Length: 193
Length: 195
Image (cartoon, rainbow over all chains, first blue to last red; front, side, top):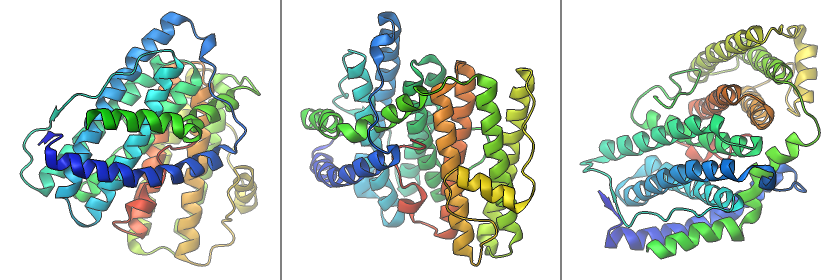
């Protein structure tokens, strides 16, 4: 699968339009969870050198998120049933993650990396191969977020990245179930699962 | 397509600023009012794990769960025990002790109310009640870990807490999937965990 293809592009646009609706819903849920009235993290208190390091790290996470988004976009039309429904849902959530990573980079006065024109995602031959591909990409995301957490500042940025990591860990669990694997094989998540 | 997607993602961050800033803002607000030490924060998380263990134990013992959900809950309970052990190990390494265990259902329910969980271990009448309580207490635990990660002073401890946060998120998925297999909308309902 090399994404995007012409066919996938049209589908992706349709998916993006649909996920826009879920984004609005997510915004309401997100605000409700926070209780409103809160304020954004103040990155001005972070030294410029640290901000630059954070931008580099978060850009790396954004690159990976873009790759995973491309994989979901290419895979959704090829899947069926509840796996397809899950993949569509996770695509929407990963787009929201990418939006937050983008915002963190902007907050730190950085320049967000652009997505690659295409991604070589291998040659999955069937549904199981596709789910394995998505599982592997989500697993890699979890490992990368976990690796990033202790290196980031301030604490609010760490918590945000951990929050995204935990969401991707849920994606891993659902995808593992689709592969008939233990959805929660370890008590401490390492990204090796 | 590339430009469109970039605009969409960039636009989502700007147009939906409320969503994009939500987890960041929640963590920021959490750090402002108090400045707890790492042992204090870990001790609170130990209490959270203790609550999870007590609630799982009570729900499993109620006999209300189907074999599928009970099996999942027992596996999760085992992992909560690992979390508690690991937190105890970290507390000892910092020269701190562990808080006392909850004594009886009244203390458990009091702790649930403090964590803003509406259910009660003494008011379980169906599997629905049990699963709902388990999911609520898991989400309360996720919130506790999320807040702790934003406040922990040591990066390695923040990473350790993030490992458990992700595990609690998976527990929510495991219990939900055991109750309603194939319903990803319920198994992973939120894009951001704990905020």
